[in-house]
Image (cartoon, rainbow, N blue to C red):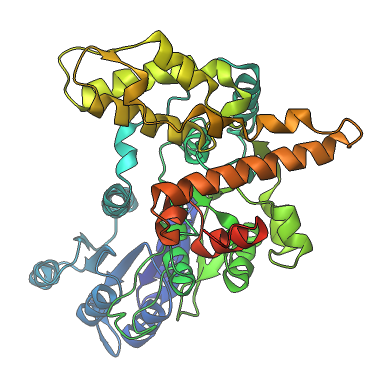
Amino acid sequence: MERILVVEDKESLRTVLRKTLEAEGFEVAEAADAPDAIHRIRDGSFSMILSDLRLPHGSGHEVLKAALETDPQVPVVVMTAYGTVEDAVRAMKNGAFDFLSKPVDTSHLMLLVERALSQRRLLTENILLKDELTQRFGLPRIIGESASLKALLEKIQRVAPTSATVLLQGESGTGKELFARALHELSGRKSGPFVAINCAAIPETLLENELFGHEKGAYTGAGSARAGKIEMSDRGTLFLDEIGEMSPGVQAKLLRVLEERKFERVGGTATVSVDVRIVAATNADLEAAVAQKGFRQDLFFRLSVVPLVIPPLRERTGDIPFLIDHFVARFSRDLKRKTTPAVSRKARERLLIYPWPGNVRELQNCVERAMILCDGDTIGPEHLSLPEPRRQTAAAGAGTADLALPLAEVAQMAARAAERGHIERALEIAGGDRARAAEILRINPRTLTSKIRDLGLDEI
């Protein structure tokens, strides 16, 4: 919710302004003099400030200065009585957004408020656009005709218009962010921001600051206040990828956001209210993490109000031809090729029988690489750079398992074999560099080290 500070010494006018703004859905804080206003500004977070220029124990100029020092992007509208327009002009030269003449016309007031807040929203969106280049692609396009994908899309269409928190579960490379964007675009929040953050890609010590923002002076180098990704996603959707990598301290703060829609910035005491829908994603087993005390049970329940499982590509192989054609056409445009190359029958066969442990992301990378390597009009198997077929049978080998074994145990063996093969291949591509292999696998280096140990790959 957008919060406005009204600074006015006359109680009657202050009350009128407060009631007018509250009637339009804003949260309003009040101050009767300059010192109180400056204290509230430095202790809180406001979307906008409306201040008289003539105040007890100071002036509106001091309020303006304190506001812009705390948050350079906050719009400040100053109020001035007849005959003091010069004062208002000076305030605008010093950074005020606009001025409002007394007596205040409430219709003019609301026009100014909407214009000021629209500018602030635009500034926030510009920050997000710089931070997320993928926004330029617009409405996400999900390719496929398989029954499992259609069932998932049907669920997304049903849950998108609600405010329910969604937990997307699926292997790395299945396109969890794409489905999160679909949830956003199909919701009533589509005109608001879509903010994505990868919890595993940001060091633990910085994640709290990235999510919740900080106040001026919160730590060395914090020269001004900064809004976090949660605040930036107000009236929109916040996508938290790799949620299982979040530290216990940040988990506790996120739980409060889910329960109360409130939080404090790092180093601050003022409560910030937000209207945000949270979509989380993980390729880890969160229930196992809860059992091992690595993830909060209460947070898990809050996140998984609507759990959605994204099927791996090997379970929807019928979608592979559609994806191949889509990526070939896309990279033909991106690479500015005069003609779109055809994919030979043998190349298609190789693409269809490969198990795609890296899922859609791996297929996309494979097609892009083939487009770059192919100089002619036809993509052949030699352009795919896929492992030899003998490496593709690791998961299939589970089909020869002893029929006396329970089905669940056979499935576990197959999954373990597939995971081992996928890690081996990533390490091979990375030349044994575990940090690089972790990047390829889209997992935390600590997680990769743990898996290498558990799978008996320490010798690699």
